[in-house]
Length: 183
Image 1: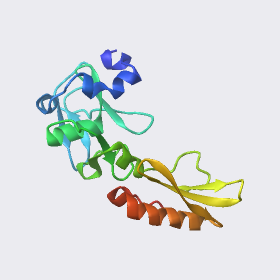
Image 2: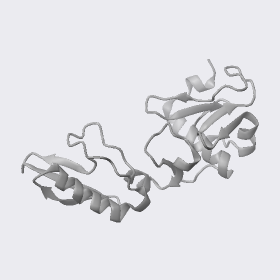
Image 3: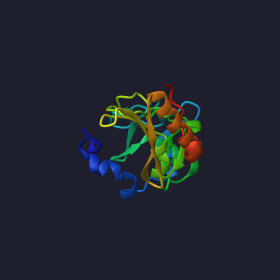
């Protein structure tokens, strides 16, 4: 067991603010392949051999790598590896797949922008982003977000009508952060 095995989840979310890992140190230990998004160890460590893929996949699909006793999210390490510094904001997975750390799938963005590139929530009965069923009125409700606040887009007879209202709103308000999801 190493220090990465005993760090708490709260510590994990603050890791790159606590100990500043440099691009130089990262490149001494790992190589990042931007076309695959995979990190590979360059050196032997207590737990890994040079040539091994780096990182463990978490239950939410993200990869995490332990370096010098600290845990880091792989997508943030990819950003550091490419640009020489950790992102100031968050790193978005454009396709919504947290395991896809290809350079072409990563972009820095604000939390607000990142929340626009969302997946369908597990408790969503409509199966559509931005659409829920309003039981009290017996209609499908379309909602988006504008300036961090929910915006009611209307109630509709069908979920497809509500979805079209959300899609129209999202395309015009979310720009590059809108991700089309199939109905």
